[in-house]
Length: 517
Ligand code: AMP
Image (cartoon, rainbow, N blue to C red; front, side):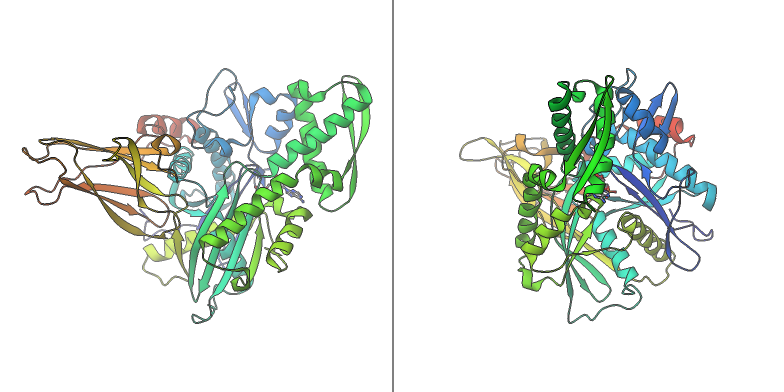
C-alpha cells in the first residue's frame, strides 16, 4: 500500500461534527495545520447543495442560515444510520457521502499546497462503534483518499499534547507511568478516555461516551432562551420558520462562545420586521444546560471506574474539543477530580496534529524506519454473537469480547448446534452492552455451509473474533473435532455496497475506483 520509493506526506484529518482540520508533518518533523483555499485553519463541516454543485465550508454556513433546507450540517451525528436526517433538494444522502464532500474539499485544498497525495489518517470519537468506523473509512475512500488508519480523537489529542511538551522524542520513565483522563467535548460528540503513558507506549485503559451529545445541544438551549426572550417582547417565535431558526442559531452559537469569556452578551436580532436586543446571561445559560454537564460528569465517573482507578491515581486531566472551553465544564471537572484541568495549546487543531503524527509513524513503520511511539487501544463496545438460550429457547447475545478489552485481541467462544444433522450455521454478530439482540446494533453475519453430515445436536462451534487496534473486526467460525475445519467469511450488513462507493468516489473526487480497501 505504501510506496517505498516516493516521499509521501504524512497527513492527518480531524473530521469534526462542526469543524474539520487537516494537518501534515513538515520537513522539520513538526505537525502543521494546512489552511483551506479561503485561508482558514478550521473548515466548517457544512455542505450546501446548489443544483449539481456541493459547496463546503464558510460559504456553505452563510448559505445555510438563509436556506437551511439545502444544507447538511452535523452529518457526523448521523453516521451509522443509512440516510441523513434531512432530504436535500429532493435527494436522500447517506451521511458518509456528505462527509466525503467535506473530506474532498480538505484533500483538494491541501493538494494545492502539498501536491497530490492520498494517504491519510482520519480520527473518530473513541466511542464510535464498528459501523461508524467503517462508514468513516468509506467517506475517505469516496473522497479519493486512502485511509491508512483510523485513530481515536483523544489518543490523537494526547499525542499532540505529548509532542508539545517534548515527550514524544524524550519518552517518560517506564516505571512511573503517567495517567491521563482526556475529556473531549466537541460540536456533536462527547467522550472520555483514560490513558496511561508508559515510556513510548500510549495505552488506553477505558473509554466511555455519548455519540449524540456536544456543543450543538448547548446551542439549542441558548436558541430556546433567546427565542423565549423574543416571544416575551414581540409575541412571535422565530423558531417556527427554518430561516428564523437558522439565523437565530448562528447568532446564538457566536453568543455561546462570548459567554465563555463574559458574563453577559447582547444579541441584536431581527425577525419579521421586529427587532430586539436579546440579553443572554452566563448564569441563565449554565442553569439551562446543567443536565447536559451532569451527563458528561456521570460518563466521566463511569470511565474512571472502568479503568479501575481513583482520582488520586490520575496525573493530568486534559481538555479537548471546542466545547470544553465553556467555564462550566472546567468547574465541574475541577470539583470532581480535585485537579486543575489542562487544555492542549492549539485546542482546535490538536486532534488533526495527532493524526498527522500517527500517519508519520505508520509511514515510517511501513518503510522499516524506527518509530517514536506505540499506541495500545481498547474496544469501546462489547462484541458478541446471537445464540439461543438452551433453557428458554429465546434469542440472547453471548459476548465474545467485552468492552474495554485491550486490542488487538483474539477471543474465542464456544457455541453449540441446536439440531442433529444440521448442515449450516448462521452466525449473527452484534455490538452493544445488552443481552437482548434487538437492543444491540447488527454488525454482520457469517454463514458456515457444508457442515459434515450426521453431526449430532449440541456439537461445538467455535467463533473466533480478531479485533484490531484500529477497531476493525475479522471473524472466523470453526467446527472442532470434524475432519474438515469449516470457516466462513464475514460480510457486513451495514454500509454502502462497493459499486456505490466506487460511483460516489468518481462523482465526488473525480478519481477512479482502486483495489485498495
Ligand atoms: P470541535 O468539534 O472540537 O471543533 O468543537 C466545536 C464546538 O465547540 C462547537 O459546538 C463550538 O460552538 C464549540 N466552541 C468553540 N469555541 C467555543 C468557546 N469559546 N466556548 C464555547 N463553545 C465553543
